[in-house]
Image 1 (cartoon, rainbow, N blue to C red):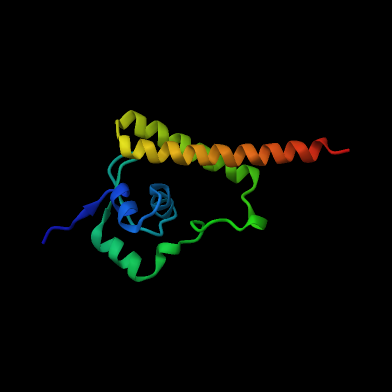
Image 2: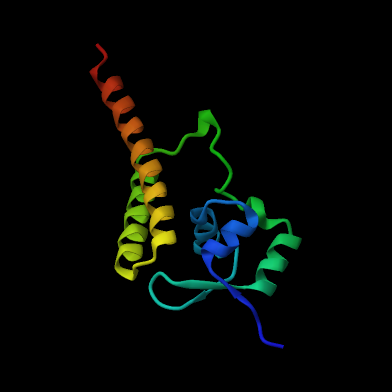
Length: 127
């Protein structure tokens, strides 16, 4: 019987998650995926089933950050860079659903970095 392959968007929809969370799992090798180019990936249904059965849907780094463990500035810069790369790729591919997800992630990343930089500037400005 032929293997079923799912897109990142399909996995995200099935698990009711942001597609970037699925991409993060793939990047961390927590969820196996087949790469079909620089940014296109597919996930085998059987790999997804094993991932879910193993309870891996709370992979490290995907849960919300506690307030006292907020990402530091270099991590925020890296997150924004990754979001920009995903946005560029989705734009080039003409993939509207992935573009929407990438733009949403980019907005979140930019906001987080802006808040961190504003806080750092305020701390430096204190007498």
